[in-house]
Figure 1: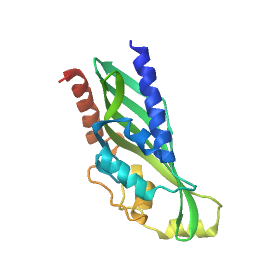
Figure 2: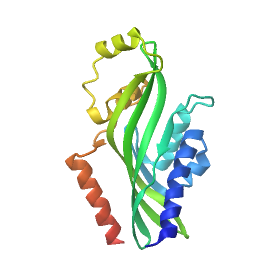
Figure 3: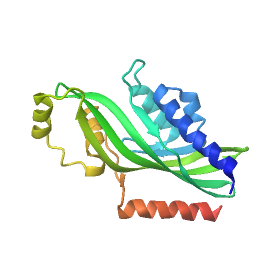
Length: 199
């Protein structure tokens, strides 16, 4: 087993999270291949477009969103790799005048390639598992907001992060992958096929 590559990919995952959260855009771009892709709830397309969209919503002063990135499980084959990495997406916002914290649990399925001796992300797709919404300060206002707001139009695995994004004026993408769904499993298998094809 190529432990040096696994360590390098694990480091890449952490650099991605820190760069994304701190607005270090050149470092974030360097995590991807030039033709890299990004697919999450609110964006699907090139990494260049993703970074430009991130810049527009980036707060120079916190509280900013934060990605708590876990240790990846990595499959290697030649100059290709597939990594699955658990991530928690943390955000603070105000809904109906109530300060809340949103925590979304997901994992990234990454296709990576080694070019010029370095591993980079060629395609990142998020699979959403569950999320929650909590009051910063418990209050009757929060309880009332939760009881009076209809969240049911958004699938449960990304219900509250989806609602938060809609409140921010963002559009949810089609074909968002949810943990345990046939589409998510089919995508995971397609990544293994890509890994072994080496074409």
